Length: 139
Image (cartoon, rainbow, N blue to C red):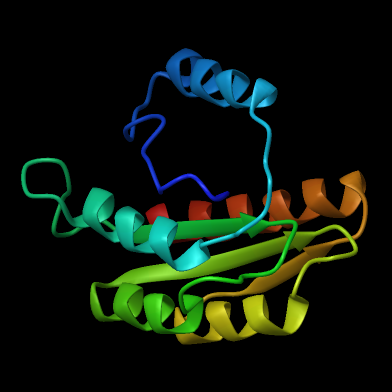
């Protein structure tokens, strides 16, 4: 997030090319702070619970990544709203300015786990652990 309002850049999709394209489109974005983590999380609740787009029996997982600290909204409250909607929230922080304690609290409120990645290998390891955990959930 940035000072721009929260938005959906790509709907949930199994077409990895479409997802990758949406992510690549973000590479030229200038991020200028004013992180509003909770706005993105609340929009994520809408995406994961939208009638006609979500399955009642499916496990709902949200992974929140940030390299900064929240200076707008309340992400812990948003994580509680996620939990109330049967959405598990995992968090990943990276970078020196990340608010590790806050994002740990967000993960706890969302019944998830927090990971801090101090380098690219730790980020890959966080994703490996999450992928392994999700594979168990879906079996």
